[in-house]
Image 1 (tube, rainbow, N blue to C red):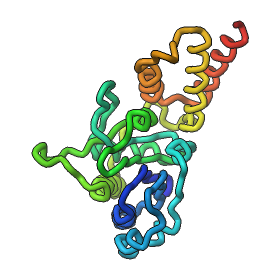
Image 2: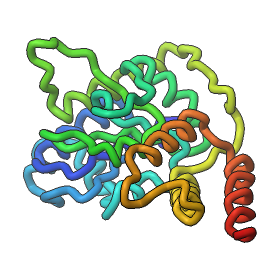
Image 3: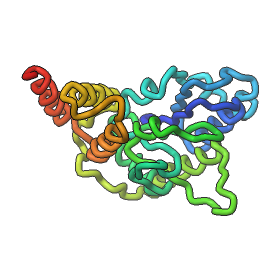
Length: 239
């Protein structure tokens, strides 16, 4: 099951953190590393910090955009604090592991980690079905990105080894829409709302982010997504 789990690192500044993350992953049996616009990569420092996990670095997939890294995934969990303006479904590391292990049977699942000093942007967080937050000492909440990956990877391994019964979602076993398909739907939905003047592109406020939260929470099946796309197309045809 671990072969369907992707660790996605976004715009990592320090190559040593990429190597340390690869080491943390290999310790726990994770294999798939995706790098979105790394500042420096490949790097001798990354290889040195990997300490024997350089095979993961050699196989790492470098992507130009986050959408590219997530396109095939049916479940995406981002590591971050809550959104500043709109709350998002949030998990602790153990709950995150249960969700991942229940969702990685057939489709790729992504765990997304942001920049060392700024984390993920609101736009990047809106690509996620859930956020995972690691409880830390409130007086010193700073956590190195490789350490954060180690915590999540450990919980994944413990969930697998203990044979814990992961919470089954209401769409368990269904053919879920991928993030690439969802992004096409969101673009279609926004276009129709602008054409119908329901959405003013000059003053969008948080409408699309709220709609993303709604549909991400629903975990749409491919067939359901096709129905929604059909409705949008019908609306466009009638105009």
